[in-house]
Image 1 (cartoon, rainbow, N blue to C red):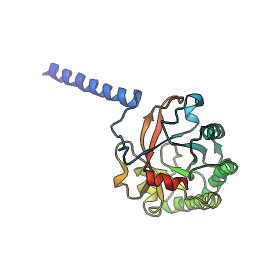
Image 2: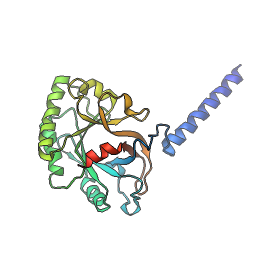
Image 3: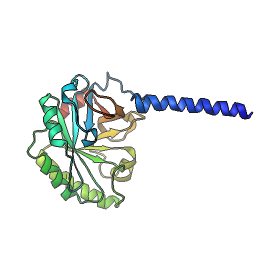
Image 4: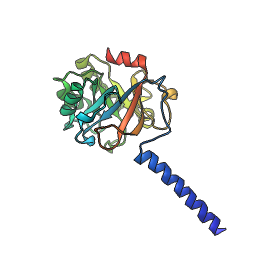
Length: 235
């Protein structure tokens, strides 16, 4: 009996190892979008990707890139300006995003973001990254959070004349956004399921964080957009 149990355990560990290899090492995942529906492909990057080999970038692999510009009230991504410049030289549409911290007021964060993008030509609407991973430990009330987020939105949309897209996942959405911001446009992160059941309008769907792109070291987030939504993003 013990031998049978041991053999079962070995088989289970083998299966787990195979799954780990294909997901973490090879970058494969079962959550693959239907390309007939989601025909536009994109990636998002930050300084975490390090130095990018732009001469190796194959423009057929993706149609757009969102690049981290800022975080909180004073952090500026050290690779932002270089990445924006290089991707624009490749004629790949670019966008910028800000990681919104729960430990800083919205007005200060907006000033930080605008200071980084005000002199740059950006093709796509601004994005605000709203999630718990990587954020500070503070958890303000829904009312306080909503006030600070609105302060950020007012400043950025006044400058850009484009509606901000909310990047988020279900955890953050149902904690802070589902009461007051359901009518916003979303960039939905879910690497296990499609966004059909997500209650708000999904413009961009991040379906994987294990992408492999020539010229970029390590894993890259992969995103898709429906063609009609893509045309609206470019307006």
